[in-house]
Image 1 (spheres, rainbow, N blue to C red):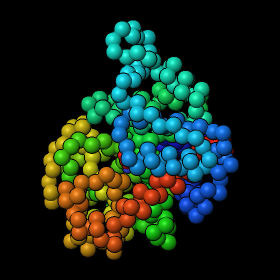
Image 2 (cartoon, protein in one colour):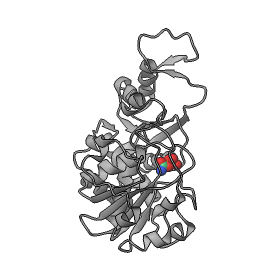
Image 3 (cartoon, protein in one colour):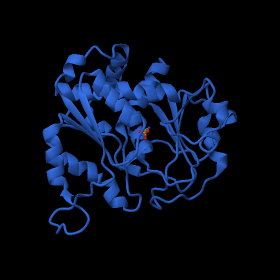
Length: 313
Ligand code: CP
């Protein structure tokens, strides 16, 4: 595996999820794979789970891991044929090539601008790294996708049920700030690839890109969407059409125990971090229906399965 940025980089997502579960059963069994190998993780945006779980995954595989906060003090130029006489002191061509001298695998987190839809949806920054890096690149969340999260989500669903085709609902929920669409886009494409019975529910105006939604049903009545669901996956995202805008913060869309009661004893999922009593009520998050901690735990084994494939590549 030369790159891990989207489900399309994986020919067999179910098999990869099974490899992650095998890693979970024997976390240190492949330590020889990473001996004398180094992974460099570049964070242009903050992270708790992605940073620690990917680092732990590398360590479990016997690697050395270097994490760098790349946001402050390192102004990179991504455009070609430009006179670099402003604040940007280094070009992506040299930066990616140099980091490749120190790393056997590079991980990059780079959020969208939420102002330039065309550039964000070209996944410009991570693609420029891939273009000029000479080693495999892992997305630690790009402008439009979060594949390590989605793989962990699939792993979590697989370990919670024996059903091959669960009813999964992706539900928008309110949030005071404008958030990226990356987690939701990515979740949709992984659930589609895994053959889940997926429904998306959100208020009008929060339609996601058709390139991701494709023929997945959209139900504007949240309570109707929840009926009989096995998994409720909740995430806020800002508007795609009115790009990056918060159109409303209707608290009626918050996930409550009453709404969870409409499901088939469904499990509550969220990638975290989550705002309590804004996105989801305490009564859900603190109930046995919530599997958010298991989900976060599986981030390590999802990353481990991806890194292991890259080390074998
Ligand atoms: N879910 C997730 O990516 O969390 P962090 O932003 O803490 O990495």
